[in-house]
Image (cartoon, rainbow, N blue to C red; front, top):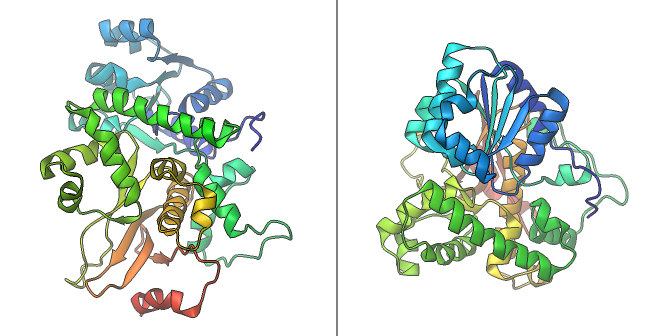
Length: 383
């Protein structure tokens, strides 16, 4: 993959719209997903002042006088890694935008879902527009804008790709193992990429997890992450998981939201129209990047291509679900992601539900051949 060019991010269009309409815009996303680059691009096109709280001197000034840091500014202020300044900074921004309700005053970027903390979310409730910036999508890598969600709900049937553009199963598995983190994709060898993922996870656990929580015994986090990688794309039963890895149920339930806050995992809830009591309520859990999941499992594309590989299906589903989650950022159709499974075993990998109640079910298969039987559960749930 060639990275000499600057990759255009599809989140830019909704970001510009949000800046025009909202007093505060928050860009959330995993560390190294490209938030800083996106902020710089926005500054280049729309002006403003950009500061990073990763700079020790800037952070010290922000913590010493958060009110003075954000007050008396006419330009757009872009603050990177804003979560490092904590609650006082958010409250100072709230005071500014409560006095002056002009749109386009602040763009805040953070490597955690810091606004999930109740005190912070209440501070900016009704004042902030939140945009999730995931690792690179396949369309961003290829220079095209994916409209899969919009096409589904507009009943636009898909045309066959042009000659030479048909991806083989090996192509898909290579993309699954590569993931979407820009720095990982820049690595020239699998060994170098593996080293990057190892360093990345160590940094997130030792720095980001420690910053957003009061969790102790962080040495348990890598073990929990490896188990979550092994069960990616599966239903999450916290009590069963705790028993498998030898941690207390309370510890696992406390750690899981933290891992979501720092964008290492995300959960997809069960879907129901409340028409039956047969539906299970466990969410599915996914790692936020299939390349990271493959690294934690110690598998590569060649290993996944083996007919007996147990990881191929779950990792491909993780890859597809994450790609669709990325498209939620820029799609015109607003959807929520769910999965479905009833007590009789009928299962739909992914259900997209639009705001008006329309639903689309997706089955994700790692096999090279698709047969009529693969649509059985979709037909059954439809009927």
